[in-house]
Image (cartoon, rainbow, N blue to C red):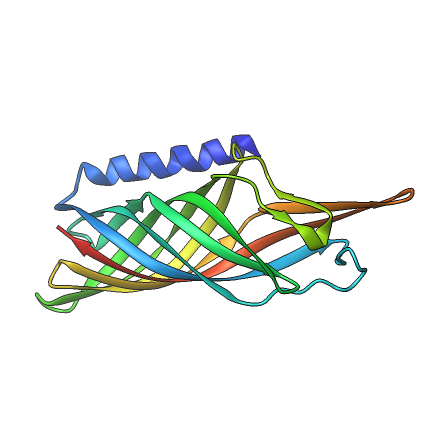
Length: 207
């Protein structure tokens, strides 16, 4: 898994640097947005009272600096460093999952004259947990170590207005679990793992 993470990071960096050599536009900005999250479970899907676990949709947010790069071929790239808070729910108990997220996306845009451009985007996103969560209704439940890097994948589309304002929507797909919970009952050991996919809405201003 670590080798895969390193390979993805290396490929993303090589792509960004390579495109930078042909860049016609490099812009720095600030982005912010909302994420809408619902947990998906695997393993023993019960809580401390042996009730089936479930999750409800919760809205969170993120903010951070953003860098966009464009070429004359319609191809481009963007990257950001985002402080993110996701509000996650299990059986009515909500906890805050805080991370730094680093999305690195390839984008392809089509100009609509001098006023606007539409684009599609896709690429990996690397998340770094800032602390631990615990779920009182799931026994010894914690998220993985804060040294753990969680890899996800973005797909989305957006609209750039006047080369300054950027509005986009996207979906973030988790590759693996972001946390786990364990409980012990006699000789039995129960473990629940959970991950979250997120629907994202973002706005950005490019200087």
